[in-house]
Every structure is written in C-alpha cells, then in structure tokens.
Image (cartoon, rainbow, N blue to C red; front, side, top):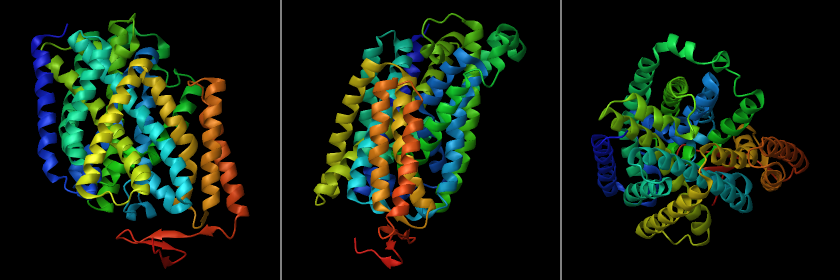
Length: 477
C-alpha cells in the first residue's frame, strides 16, 4: 500500500521538475532555443537527455510487463532500444551530423521535395502522437497505483504536469528536467527496485526455483514477436523525430556521437534491470490481474515507505522524459512542417507562443486517446509500424546513397503509408504484416524509381555550418 510519505516524495519530485522548467524558460529566447535547446548541450547533459528520451514507458512499463509474462525474453524490448541508439551513433557519422534542421521531415524535404515533406510530416505526427499516448497510459498506471485514483484521473494529472514544464521552457526545460529524471531513474529503477525484488524472492536461486524453465529462455516471447520488435523498433529509433530532435541539442557533432554511444550502453543496463523486476513480480505474485501494472506492483510490494515513493517517482521520471519528447516533437512537426511552411513570417516570440499552444492541444488529445486505448504495447505497435514501415527506408537511403531521386522518395513514402494503413484494417493493429510489407513496398519502389529517374537524381551534402550543396553547388534555398 502506498503511504502518505510516498505521495509526498512524488509531489516534491513534481514540484522540482516544474520549478526547473520555469527556471529553464529564461533561456528560451528564439525558436531554435525553444525546440532544440540552442544546440548547446555538453556531453554529460546530452547523454542523460538522450537516454531519458529513449527509455520511457515502453522500456520501463512495457519491458517489465513483458518480463512478467514471458521471463527473460522481456529483454527484447529494451535490448532493441539499446541496439537502435548504438546504430544511431553510426548514422550520426554521415552527412546527418552537419544538418542544421529542426525536424526529421525538414530533412526529407531537402532530399525529396515539399510534397514528400508533407507526407513524412503526417506519418511522423502519427508516430509521435502514439508515443505520447503510450506514455500517458503508463503515467496513468503508475499514478493510479500510488494514489488509488482512477486511471483516467491519473492520466489527466500526469498530462497536466508535463504540459506545465514543457509549455513554459520548451526543449531547455526538457533537457534540464531530463538530468533530474536520469538520476532518479538510475537510483530507483537500476538499483533499488531490482535489489529489493531479488531480496524478496530469495535471490537468483529463489527466482529460478519459483519460475518455470521457459521463463529463462531468451526466445520465450516467440520468434514472430522478436522479428516484430527488430522491424518495429530499430528502424523507428533511427529516424524518429523525438530522437533526432534530442540529437540536434548537442553542442557539436562529436558530442552527439559520443553521447549517443554512452546512452546506448546505459539503456541496455536499464533493460536488464526491468527484466529482473518483472521476473521478481512473477515469482512473488504469479496471478496478477493486470500485467500492465507489474512495475507499479513491484514498487508497492517490495519497497518500504519513502523508498517506495522514490521508486515510483523513478518510474514517472522515465515515462515523463519520453512523453515530453513525443509531445514537443508533435508540436514541432505541426509548427515547423505545416504552419511555418505556409507562414514563414511567424518567428521569434510569436513562433514560441504558437508552439506552446500546440503543446497544450497535443497533450489534451493524447490524454483523450490514452483513455480509450489504455495499452502500452498496442500504442507501441502502431507508432513504430508507421515510422519504420514508411519513413525509414527513404530517409536512411538519402544518407547512404550518393545520389537520390525526389520522385523515388515521394512514391516510396506514399505507397508504404497506404500499405501499412490498409493492412492494419485487414490484419489488425497487433499484426506484424503492416510493417513488414510496408518496408518491402518502400524498398522495392524506391530502388525501381531511383533507377528509372536518372535525370531527377541529385547529390546533396551539407557543410559544417549547415549550408546545403546540390550536385556540388551551393543551394540558393
């Protein structure tokens, strides 16, 4: 049972986070400040921020739930997160490192034109919105266990807290609060809860005696599910707006590369911790009515008063750090790739205020949607099916190939989007077919059109100051 002192600990955490957001608001004086923290984060701050935005409810709540249901096979969620970010560090060694842009779709537009940018923006918005939704669902689960309030009310409270600090300080607020969240996550999730869980079940020997042999099989979640996570998560993390937006906050390409590598190692260790937690709950409480509450149940069961509050605050920290990435990313896409394209005169304070309004609207919509979905893993499937199935192929190929055709990118995006959407209706949102066939359609059409459209192919590069060169000549755009 959650005690008064636990709730006080969490309230203190919320007050600190909001206070830091207000403090950070003084630094947000331009659109670039508000959306990418002025591209100024040093290595320690950037590493913490990158790790925090990646982990979220998918790894913390989803990973623990999967480990509760399937044992050590739960490592596939967090493990794919870590591998994805490791590969992102490699991608940052390409021409991407010199791009001075605010959104993934802006990059799509540079390579493939304004129509492709619009299609990419729509797809990216679906992804980011579902990321926000799944983390609002996770916040509701944790706060509901803590306070005894309904999940719906808990989601409203969590959404309100996130809006409070993002709206005021933008990406600076996100970056500064991510430092706090990183520290709390490390203490609560990586150390305290796994240790207390193992003590409760008699250590690793007790865990082995309490759980069936299949719980210690890495393939326990099934081959099809493993393949689904590889296709869903790895491509998605390489091109996600929330991840790129955080990458653009580094003060130099070198900081971005090194910090991303460090973050990938941290994420893998974090994933191991969530698996231990989930398996400990399965050993102690084998018949949990709702496995999505495995993490919150672990905190309520294994931790004494006060410590329980810190661990629950750690869970909320991990969730909020990703939820804010989805929310501010959605607002960035709407403003930078939709509004600003048609009304470029909006800048400075007007741009910041417009983005603030969008942040509030996105958060309200995310809470409403979360109330109806109420499943972390379902929202995760939808988010990454669109991102990985549609955007990954044309965007990554733009960095790897010397010359690309604008028509190839546009046709690839449109056809894969239609494929994923149609297959969702035919096969259901938990099916792996939408993403697999989406990627197949994307790859085939891209290479076919890119080979045919020889006159439309261009070589696009970037100078260190972000200046664009098309076929070796400086772009006038």
